[in-house]
Length: 325
Image 1 (cartoon, helix red, strand yellow):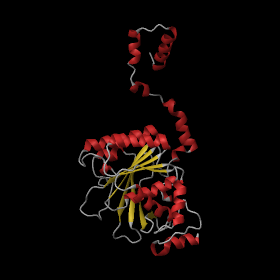
Image 2: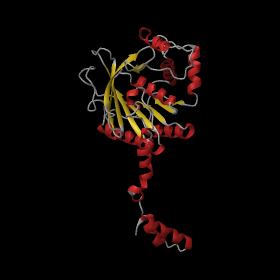
Image 3: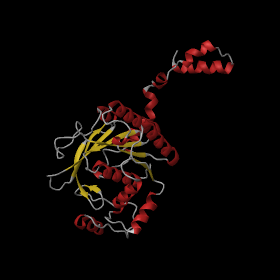
């Protein structure tokens, strides 16, 4: 008897009041796995929506226009952002979050390495493009992010159960749809505990799928012979291979030491659901505003009014570029 026939028979028994405990046993044994085995036709509406209406391109755009038509941070997926020590992982994550807010998303930062105050100070500089933000810039930033940027105020370490509870609460209470976890190193298990690493990446992937949010997990790269050695998908993430195996996307960030016109590089070395998205790009870095940018694409102010001018950029580049637009 097919599943629909079983379901219909079950309804018939209940409606007639002829409930035989022995007869019901076989229905109670229908497993969740059986219920989830579905025909191709069950997904036709979603498939047509993606192919014909372009919903596959929904998601958070990265701060670099090069990726606009080939890659997004979508709901129900998890991304690992990894890099060498001092490569700027947290600054890149902050820049991505500000871009997400600018696109209408609501964010949660679970950073056990930086206090909310330190994170906000950095984000005000990133959004205003001011090395020393003026009062007006700070007030404009607060107006812009009100209700859109939440922080979990704890430093040190966190266990997986608490982390999942925080995420679930933020999604239900504040409708958050992008979560940053910074970083794997702050989880309350040993750095060589591969099973716990597998457990946390699977748990984050599951909650991303179930709550239809995007989760970004910051990791550290494996220690190499030299900080100048370029990262790739094989040495870009320290720890269990399950981290990169389970992640939907892996983004690596490294520093350039001998390349003219570039301070850093970013590598999208894994993009499971995107054809043609895996690529490397050279980036410059503005120390004044903590923004990464491409040589022909200066970062833009976010949440600011026209009278608030960028200031303190590298040899005045940002301010000059803004005035000439």
